Length: 452
Image 1 (cartoon, rainbow, N blue to C red):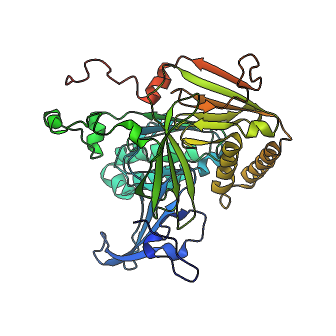
Image 2 (cartoon, rainbow, N blue to C red; image 1 turned 30 degrees about the vertical axis):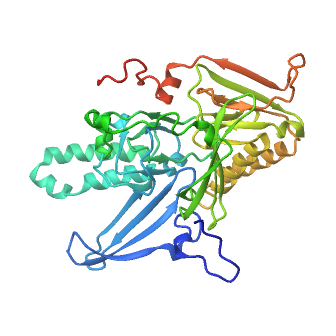
Image 3 (tube, rainbow, N blue to C red; image 1 turned 180 degrees about the horizontal axis):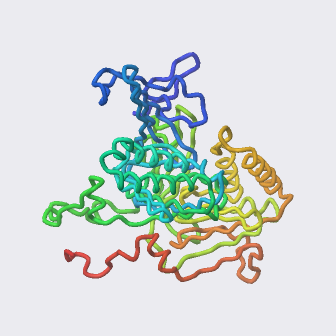
């Protein structure tokens, strides 16, 4: 039985209250304090927990411990999101002092490398944390400096080598030469800030990869044993025909992607004219009012990728229906704007709806409080230009590139003799990198029932 929204004057149930709020909101009342044992003096200290959201990323829990008896402190971060479908590799080229202030979110399953100084921080050698590029370097220096005084007496040669290495790390903060920060996380729950929001950052490269069996087991994910596969009975086609799902709206309980409060998702299988079968999922949160309209492809990956170029000239172009899959990236060359497939989920909307979603995500999730004046000015200027685009005072080209071929843009002309001159459709063969991103290179399509 679905629950109804509270009436005026009634209090919202605690179970429906948002759990994760924006990181730049006033969250003083959300901090939870619990008593914990101090591992240094074994007396009682205080641990403070704060569930929050990181813009352009996901939900996390910040933990801070302090002991008033011995002064010991400890800060950690735990991901509150599920393990992602793939791991992530992020490489940042640090060129200026402002790059040292970029936020870095690390999970417990992340490793860090700075090749220029041969620094490598392996998985689980440090707890997850929210820090900056400079904070990573400073924490490494602090760790190496421990017990140096005693080491200089007992092992002077080793101490001298460590002092020389610490000096190399300090020079990184002086930015005499650029260096690379490489972060790899098999859980996919790590992040390096892009100060340009959804715009492409030429210094930041992100790549997703398929985990190995050993990495899945390290995360506690185990594959089904082939010996038990006979216990699974497939559903016969006549027992659950797919036609029965057309026109029927299914509901299932889930959590709000914005505040994580309990809510319901409506799902419907439908056909897009001149395209294919898709699954549309819509969620409305009764707690924070957040709405989502997500689309999943009902078919497989197409033999070729597809690229749409829509020239937006008048209001008619803004009303075109668009089916954007979860593998489709967006770009506007005139604004140097590039939106990856993971920034906006799959959705069935219009061209105007896509533009509004991009603008809202840029304006709503940017680090307004912590950004420097230059970044704020650039973002403000960019948003002003974007508003002119929405008013059709600037002619732009919206490019939708989907290597899986599951994206569709409505043509304004139904007559093949008079093609739509403002819509360009191009099909192309995927590259090895595209197939790697889609997980096709490791897919076995012949004799797959045989154990490997």
